[in-house]
Image 1 (cartoon, protein in one colour):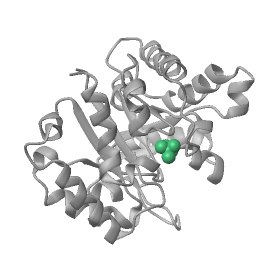
Image 2 (tube, protein in one colour; image 1 turned 90 degrees about the vertical axis):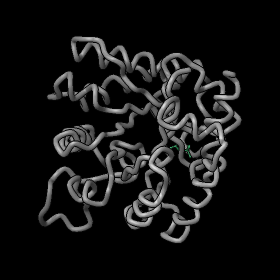
Image 3 (tube, rainbow, N blue to C red; image 1 turned 30 degrees about the vertical axis):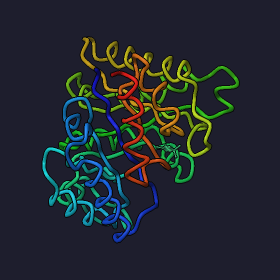
Image 4 (tube, rainbow, N blue to C red; image 1 turned 90 degrees about the horizontal axis):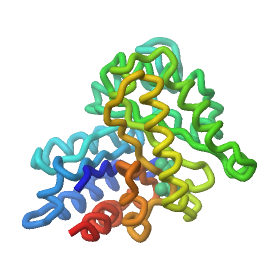
Length: 265
Ligand code: PGA
């Protein structure tokens, strides 16, 4: 069975207290003899991305868990400078100091609501790699772009921009997350065929640009839930899911993996 990367983007949700409650429920899901506990680290990799103010609550909950079932901790954004007069921003070394190993960059909400450009996102991706954090690089087309047949052009523009100036070794360290904007938070996921097409293209594009072949990890995101997980995660080019709404409760979050893995037994 392939390894599934199950990443939960909490967005602007879950206070410190709610984060503690999430982790109590999360740990309970792994209490033995759960098949989930056996899968963690082998066929399952879980990461959570709380808001900045809940990172320390998440970090201490993770630290108190059994290492074999503890999830990875990441943040939802960062600035590319290490420190200085950038009011309101948080740097990559600060995230590392807070216990993060991963950081989401280029999410469509950052692009659309906060005006982040391809160029700014590329600088952030490079800075994350320099700080030894794993970028979870998001990209995807809007509904208008899909309907006018521009999906593959938009995706390749966004990806080429993020990869410019990176070595093949750096490209290999990135986790890629294809998230069609029209599928995010709408309840309307891409079909498995639509998601597969773009995820397969993503792998090809990274390898062509790198000039060699290596395993490229590509997640699909956009209304992933327990009831569509099986079909989406079974696709060849899809290595996991970046989950928003359904990641806010440990039960529905982990159900996504359970639904998939039970179909493979
Ligand atoms: P959603 O969000 O699962 O709520 O659609 C996904 C995301 O934005 O990462």
